[in-house]
Length: 313
Length: 74
Image (tube, rainbow over the protein chains, first blue to last red):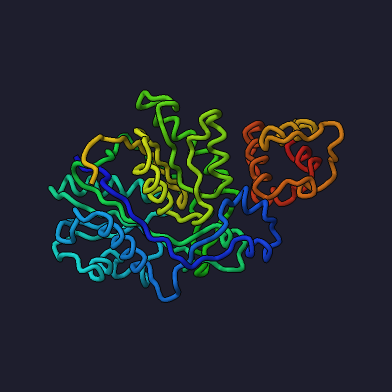
């Protein structure tokens, strides 16, 4: 059965000091630390495009997993809403070219934001299994620095650039379990491109996350006849420190199982969940993890992944 | 009907604060009480759930003090 075999990432070394930005916008250090949660926001080099971030993440995946060679790769999927150029050609084809992957590779983009990683896992798993293929790489690369207006406080303090690469294949350490999706198009105007820049209605996005995500997680657990205590870790999209805290608070004593790690990355859109899993799924004793992505659309997706005790690579 | 006291209670619950119900000034801007923009979002979500009334973005901008909020939800 196809599952998650390994994850690698690329986080640019260039970054914006968020405390300096806070001063510029008249916000306190306390606000940045406790509410935004990001002390630094990685920024890609001006010469780097989305495909370059993707390539660096995949190269890191190859370096860390000698068992995976380029000739083994059957498919790559790029989750992005900030593709190279205007999205034509698709970034996945550019990544195939830059990495010199075999021409037999299936490659396509998926346009989703913060829910994209969870969607992407199931899209790629389904694609591989339906096609009789063995190895796929799910790439997240959505550098919002391309669309942020540096004078807009609502978005400038929040988003960081990063890319990740997840190897999906057989004999994996983590299996994909139950999943649930949601979409509410009433939210399309609250997080969007407006005159070439990102516009975010912070109140509406915050309200959506608070009212929707915890309920969605509980519904999935109930459907699977699990209780919140059965989950070792909750790896939610790191929308902001305040969002993670507010959702976790609703789980009372178990709130410490909610991972909050965005101090050095900020909100990296579809990369935030794999960045957490890279460290906490493969670097812990956790056996069952909830992953939940939510954002642009509004779109959300929650899944349970479980350790399979199989093939560490 | 939402009283100013109920607004303070909702603020305390939503933000884990301990504002004094008798002595917290009703006419002072929430910002001056140490409540930032994200805290304000939290308060509105709590009051929307309690009252069942949605606050539009336009209306939310006019809610500056505890008194404003109580009057709005009343």
